[in-house]
Image 1 (cartoon, rainbow, N blue to C red):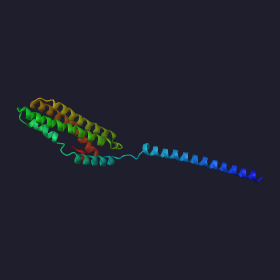
Image 2: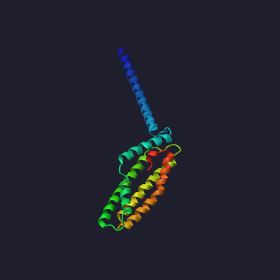
Image 3: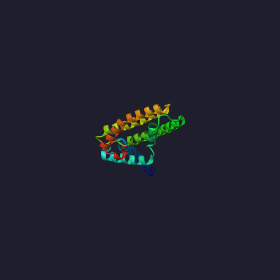
Image 4: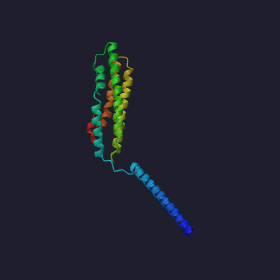
Length: 195
């Protein structure tokens, strides 16, 4: 009888142990599902609205950093203006040297405009101003494309007269997009980004 009771007690202990393991497993599964749900909600769930003040602050901070890192961005204008304002008959070597310098600086400018576009595009869109920010970023992209076209056409110019025509055309073409961009920057309050 003692042996039977010992076997019963042993069987009851195993059953309790099995039940405890089952409940621990269920609790661990529930905890895992809950942790996963919290992770999804945190990463992709609703966020607090991004206000224009937040966007303005981040945009101005980006532009402060950007302009501090990119000194000498006006070399493109200066080199192209040397071609435009210089005398028409120039020695070929002097013209080619100025043309090549201007082309290099214009291509550098394309890269800088791409950085501005990427930096502003990385900032979340503010509530109520999404369209304005999207227009601004499209405008920045347009100016970068204009610089790219200017550099390409200028690099193929054969003489001062042709280079003057190309540079004058692109400087004229840039007036409207830059003015539109500056208007949006003022509206959004990103005055550190004004060009």
